[in-house]
Image (tube, rainbow, N blue to C red; front, side):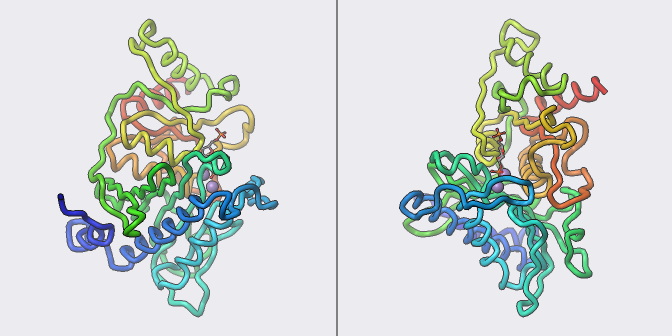
Length: 334
Ligand code: AHG
Ligand code: MN
Ligand code: MN
């Protein structure tokens, strides 16, 4: 049997090796991984754990909160508050950032998360996940403004997908690694390293029910995919839409593809549905580290200067040549 590498061993090697990740960052990643393990247990209990259904409240974005949105948020906060590795946290489910209570030591990192991504899939037993992003605290009091750093400043990003397997996917800026949860041992085992997204693909992910609301460049790209072999692309395309960004991105990291949640006319004043700081930025970091690309149609997402914590953004990410094509269509239309 080949030797198994645990998350701890992987991180210690990252600490000693080229990445030279600081001990505090290693602790942070281990704590997030432990929290994800705890969230996985709640997710798996489902109806038996009374974790399904809505909580009867709304978050700052006006979305109805599910019980698991709140449970996952609390698990992440409680796990990360006291270790001394963080200066503050921000989440999809909290209006403002959460400072580390004064009686705990203050660390140098900022953690942002989407505690439960794909909430509409919880009750129907389809893959969901947790997304996180880590920034350095640049000093001074921790406020919402401390988090408003572009994605290029991220020092770590990852997600955990709660699916048929529970998988943690991670980057510290030296490629992308995947760890599968061994439930019996309770440990994360390295199951894939230096993931690479194929540059070309025949698979796209977009919510087609919004087609009539799209902008012309998005419509052009999808129309051409739908024409298949007979059209300008000269090949047939396949479509997937899971409605959990984590699960869609996981498929793309595994076998390629393009994912889009573009701006559309339903809410013309919003740049898109997905949130920049704790959805688009961490996923863009992972995708770029795997050799893919990620833009908002015009610009690299990680170079967008955020103006607010819950800022939204249009997202086009995945296989490089397809993302470049969609981005070129947007630039031509400008
Ligand atoms: P969340 O559950 O954290 O609010 O995020 C859901 C997001 C994303 O995961 C997914 O790609 C998208 O919303 C699905 O949106 P539609 O239901 O509009 O397809
Ligand atoms: Mn989400
Ligand atoms: Mn969420």
